[in-house]
Amino acid sequence: MKKMLVLLLSCALVLGCAGCGGSDDDNAGNGTSDASTESDASVDESDSSSEDDTEAEDVKSEGVMTYDEYAAADVDSEVVVETYVQAKQSWWEDKATFYTQDKDGAYFIYDMPCSEEDYEKLTPGTKIKVTGYKAEWSGEFEIIDATFEIVDGNYIAEAEDVTSLLGKGELIDHQNKFVSFNGMTVEAAGKNDAGEDVAFLYSWDGSGQDGDDLYFNVSIDGETYTFTVESYLCDNTTDVYKAVTELQIGDTVDMEGFLYWYEGVNPHITSLTVK
Image (cartoon, rainbow, N blue to C red):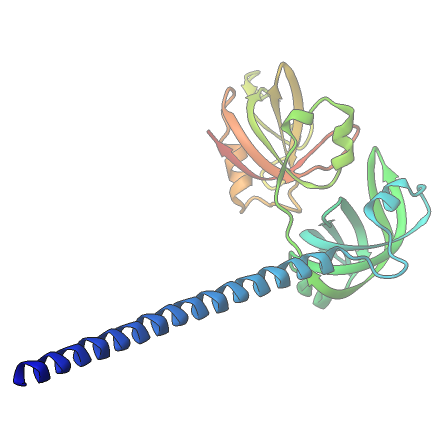
């Protein structure tokens, strides 16, 4: 009888433990699954929000041109664009010059009326709506006589590598964009007073001095191009200005800057690294 009672109690105990164990495993499993589902949902919502924000940035307001429409517009015609400040070149007597860009192309805005207070607000990434006139000067397309307003949105362009486009007609399609050039070789820019080859010049003809624009030559695939450090954009206190004044003929360099145009490609370089 005692043996039978012990046997019955043992069976009851085993069944009870098995039931508790199953309950705990199920709860643990459900908890993990719920947490994972919540996490996935959070990621999906975040990704969706990020995509929505990106798409929202790319949508043009009513009456605003796409970059293709701007590029096709006649010189001297009125243009209306929404774009993002990438760099500020200068402010003087309530006029300012900007390098700007959206996801499709870039716009150089020259001498736009702008108070000093507003100039300080126009930090890189700031979205602006600009109304002005398309102009051309020595191959450089720009917007002049413009007015602007700050609108919601923010965008910083990554440098697009256009090294392979040097010497090709399609390079101009990237005019004014933030771009990079890689693996180029420094060539002689001219001669100093002693008749020796030098790697850079102050001003285009070497007649300048410290603080003026820097001109230097770089080559790739047997072709040589003149690049510039625009002193209004990057003055003699900047790293890139110092780096160019320390160049040696034969150095291999990687560079970033804005694809400015003057009688042909004349990039305004903002960073340079000797490899």
